[in-house]
Length: 358
Image (cartoon, rainbow, N blue to C red; front, side):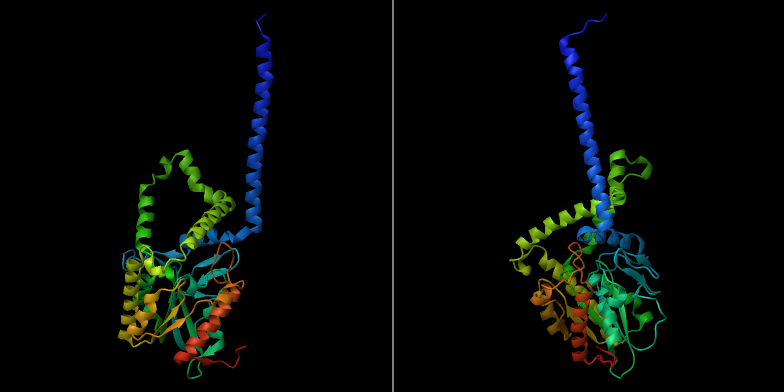
């Protein structure tokens, strides 16, 4: 009979209890994570589907033109005939990569081409609710004929990319007038971000050589998009608090402003030069928050009409954002922007009110 001690008899039950408790703990944590994932996917707290939808846009709704991917031009553009059914809206483009709703055949009329980033694109709402389509419905050309509004908005575009896009497509679109909506993101260095992303892709090993942990990290945003969205939201909220702490600093005193404005001004000058060559009237809508002080000065010096296109403080207090995660204008915000655009375009003499306006 093997020799046993009282101590060994007491250790085994204790080890089993610890193992059971550890198993219960792990099971509880996994259950909580799974429940959180299901909750996030079902109820979309804070509008975190925004992250999934923007990733889908960049993966499914853009193309890389052969002449693109350079510091002074486009890095990508909207794919012709793109179709995305996002969480709260539909995104469609026509044969030129311009945003449309039902993709109906384009009618003839006075054509205003709207350049810009996601503000112009009206990300987060259906095309019919976008401020550009509202302008098209509620205005006529100066001669009383139909107005055609061409929405050339692109996510993450800056003025350099907008100028290059205009140069590539202006002949086929044949606009009569051009409007550029400028945002503070136009000061960002999109090329550096693009190079960093491409360098990261180049450093990744081939699929067959990816280790288990790296593979799990790559697939986590797909398999657990709810948890990933919540984590992304928390991270962005921390960044927003940091930015708010710096909000008292003048924009011109913040790091990188001079270089950012230089790039932005270069794009503005290119757009103006293209319009001058073709005899196209050109105007700027200023949606910068905080204000870019050099923009108004540049427009005045170059005789480019500029209009305030930002929300007033009282308007910001309204529910004008898509969600806590997505700060783009919702349907109400787009309605307010449409009103501002209608006033500006009437002041320019580019439109007149339609009889069917509200």
